[in-house]
Structures are given as structure tokens and as C-alpha cells.
Image (cartoon, rainbow, N blue to C red; front, side, top):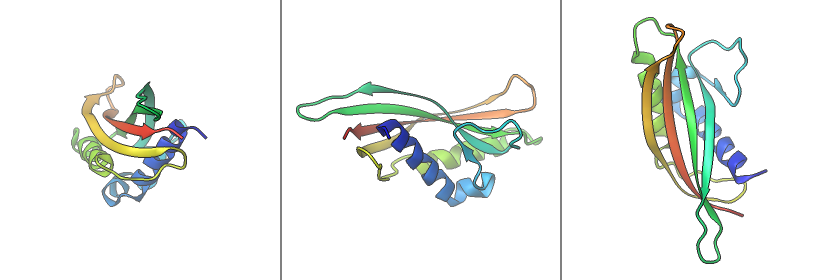
Length: 134
């Protein structure tokens, strides 16, 4: 397992355990959701990392995007509530990785937008993790 996979697993576990997130999506947090999954749900979006090596320490700053999906007919209320819940669950979270060590986890961006299909509402939460590599 890589540090990236360990970070994603920790994020998914945190989101599934968070009461505010679960109140909206239940346990519907996916790496790659099936086409038949109904909204609302969360999916793991793109990620990238930048090496952050220091004297005798290999590290990285990794950014992970969590996508929030809704088809609520009453506007952006549900997707905004979901994006806020994701941000609150992850910002400052002090979880444990199965490989490497999490130094910090911070929400860096929250965005809500209309999907091009005219029905789906999309929230984006980007988190940044500083990780000491194994």
C-alpha cells in the first residue's frame, strides 16, 4: 500500500463515521461509484502530491478532491450542506495512516457548482495533507 492509498482509506473511514456526513449520504462514499448509484453521495476525485523532503525525512504534500453529488430539486441547499459537512469532518482531522504518518490535514477549497446536465449539483472539497513517508 502507498501513502496515497492509506490517505484515501483514512479519508473514506472518517467520512463514513462522521454523523453530519452520514445524515446526508449514509455510507455512500465511493472511490469509483457505479452508474446506478443514486444521489446524494460522495466520490473521491483527483489527487496529486508534491515531494516535501527535509533533512533525513521524506515527505509529501498531497491534495485530494472529494466530490459531493446531489439531485435535490430545491436548489443547492443539500449539496452545500454536504460540502460543509465534509469540510468540517476533515479539516484538522488527526487520523492515523496505515503507512507513513499524517502531520496535518486541512481543507483548502470548497466549491459548489451546477453540473452541465442541468439536474445534478456538484460540490468540490479539496483537502491538503502533509505526510511523512515511511
